Every structure is written in C-alpha cells, then in structure tokens.
Length: 274
Image (cartoon, rainbow, N blue to C red):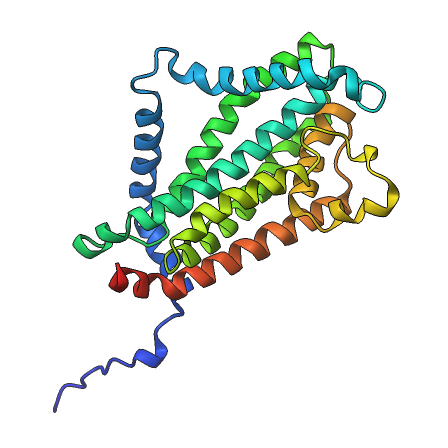
C-alpha cells in the first residue's frame, strides 16, 4: 500500500493579513523585548529617567496655559485641566504614527537577514507609546487635584478611549509606512499633515469658539472625536455617550484593519525592493 503524499496548495494559504496576525502572536516575546528596548533606550542617558515622560508634557502645558488661559477663560474655565488631556492624547497619536513609519522602513533591511513579523516594530511602537501615556497620567491626576477637579466613575472610560485611539494610531501608522516604503517623501509630508491636523483638532482651543457653520470640521475629523471622548471624563466629569464610544470603536477597528491589510499586502514587496 502506497503512502498518500500531502500536496501543498498555495491557493489554500491564509490571507497575508491573517498569517501576519498568527506570526505576531507566535513572536509575542519579541514584542515585549522591543518595548523594553524602546523604553530603556529613551531613558538610559536621561538624568530624570522616567520622570521625563511627566515633565515634558507638563512644561508644554504650562507654556500654553500662560499664553491662552486669559484668552479662553470664558469658554474653558480651568484651562490647564482642559488643555492637558488633549495634549497627552494628541502627542500619543502624533508620536506613535510618526515613529511607526520610521521604525518599519528602518527594519526592512533586518527582514532580509532574519525572519520577524513585518508588523512587529509597529505594534511595539504603539505599546511603547501606551507606556509613555500611562506614565503621563500621573501628572494629569496631580493637576486635577491641584485644581480641585473631582474624580468620578466616569474616569473608567479612559482605558476604553485609549484602546480605540491606539487601534486608530496603529492603522494610520501602518498605512503611512506602506506608502512611505515606495515614496520616501511621504514620511516628511506626513509631518506637515500632522501639524495642520492638530490645528483642526480642539486640542489647544475649545471647539465652541468656531461658528456653527464650521462645526462640521470636527465631525469629520476622527481625532477631534477621540480627544473629546478622552477629555470628557476629566474636564466635564461625564462618561462619553454610547454613540460616541461606538463611533470610536468603528473608527479604531476599521482603520486598524485597513492599515493592517494594506501593509501586509505590500510588506514582502517592500522587503525585496529594500
């Protein structure tokens, strides 16, 4: 009796996006090592160490508060408490997405020497950003105490908003990295886009200062929704409405899925081109 020979059929291979997710789970220890490396490298030669994650956003907040507190006092009392959450979430998004493009494209040469999941650097960058954001929540809560802002159950919504923001950032970062792999100028162009994008997001100013005919800008700006949902439990002491949380979930998951699909589709070609 002859032995049956199993034939390999490439048509039955899982989609690249699914294979990448499976491989990423297998290499989860690598993600932990990359995150540990990123944190240690950032603070290794810093005199303040981890305190720098707290001091840097506080200095930015203090400078902007000196300039804008009087300007926005009628629409945003306790302006520092209004400003700081928006700065934290925007900084997390901007730094994470920018770094993903740099880390991923910089890792192309490594793909040729050893096998690593193509998305490992991107996921590690998001996780590193979450570590920095978690550290920065310390001074945020200290600021709330200083301005006698009440702590309520609404703060339980913060991890949910952060999770959806992280998914959104991962999707945007992967999409930018996928295009930047073919056109190097895209990474620099994205920095310009980020600068403009921030001014269309109510990070520094209250959205109510714009006339009604311009409010549509915030409705079509995903980051305006994320910043608003993150700020509400802190500044307004209220839970984000279910409809807003649902919108964040759809934006985060859909953007992450699109960025993941796009990047995994071109990753092998980027490795060959590199």
